[in-house]
Amino acid sequence: MRHFGLLIARIVLGSYLAVHGAQKLFGSFGGGGPEATATGFDRLGLRPGKAMALLAGASELGGGLLTATGVADPLGPIVLAGTMAVASSVHRKQGPLATNGGFELPLTNMALSLALLSGGAGALRVGPRLSKPLTWLSFFAGAALAAGTISMVLRNAPLATEQVVDESEDVND
Image 1: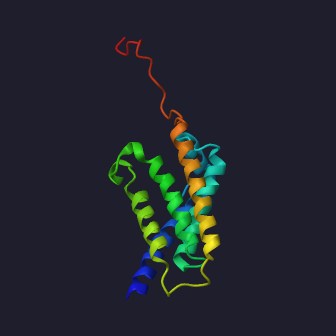
Image 2: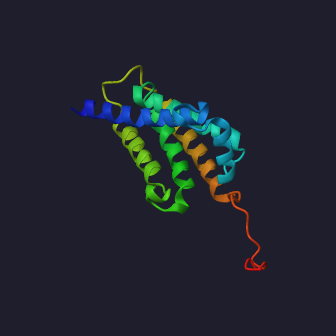
Image 3: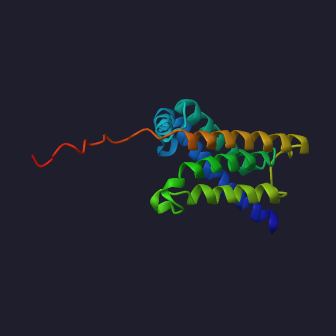
């Protein structure tokens, strides 16, 4: 039963995040594609937007596929945990709930990624596991990349999306 539960968790998490990555990379499934994603990332302070959009899309698509299939486990959950840590930091100002555009969903995805990272993919997976040295290397490289990107989010101010009205003008004249 444990292996079946892990399979379901991997398929759900991996599939949804792979689709989310395809939205960014290709405009599939109603997504904006790389140009629209790049513009949004620039506004959020993730610059250069195009490179960051491609990195995020590739991380979600690749990490999602690796997680869903269990190939090279635990590489997929490592990639997704880092990507969702960044996404959580991007949504931090909107608070914890998704109804307000907050970090609820990326935090939930990150928690499930970490649970799969610590619990393993189970027996119902495709392909070999990642060796212990490559797992540790991947973990530290992913953590460094996520930390650097989160630092970028925290240090770069978002671009203004609305024109500021000069308060000295009297709009009633």
